[in-house]
Length: 98
Image (cartoon, rainbow, N blue to C red; front, side, top):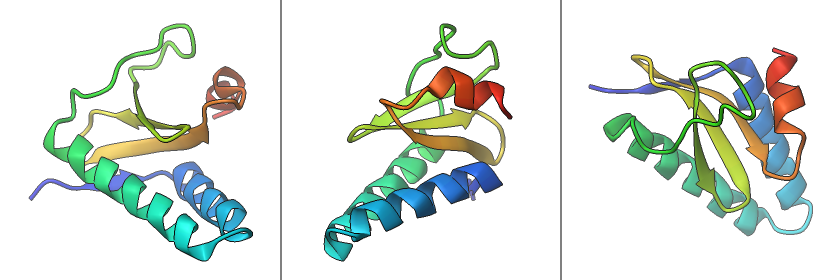
């Protein structure tokens, strides 16, 4: 069975996003979390989805969008979710830090 893992940074990203949205609506936060999980499962089934962003990183990572968030992942086995970041953040800088 195919699966995925989240790096500690990605897990922290998802929890922070949930907490931020939950300040206004727990229901909305849960809905976004569900969409992330659905996207993770979709990426496991079709790991070639998304695109590379050489302007943001030289690492062999792919980017997939859910709402305004970028799911940044590696096509490993299991699939590795590296980060989940809002598109307006300084993604290039955040990816360099790790």
